[in-house]
Length: 179
Image 1 (tube, rainbow, N blue to C red):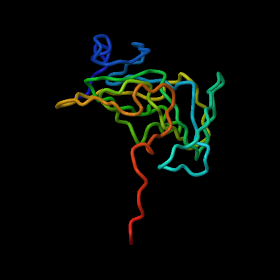
Image 2: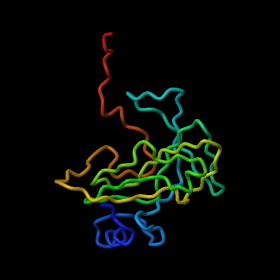
Image 3: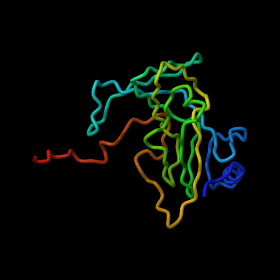
């Protein structure tokens, strides 16, 4: 079951869903528009290593916007802190943004029940594209869960601003497999 726009509004009002800041005019028939925050991160190494922390560079999005370049991964973030202890949030790019050639959150659209914070957005453009802090870049939907809930307590809880991958914390170095 997916929450309708009016039910999202009711869930925010009674605390079942947390969206801060919240604006009624960002509610859609079955989703809520989220906006791009003012900071991007880019990785600075030629090769990103999944088993190590990777250095990043912070890029502010000024009042005149910032031009995303093809072939570069940008980590953005939502203005809004979004979360729920009852519903499963899913975040997708808006179709209007996709029509500009911007891919938003392709790999990891599913949030965890119990996560509360700003979402990190994986951004990739097919052409040079100017983006602006505060632009409506995605939409979050909420689905009802069935069964017992074990709330998220992971490494990204309470995120503020874009978060680089912490995959390296999840895994030990993989040994070579004999051929």
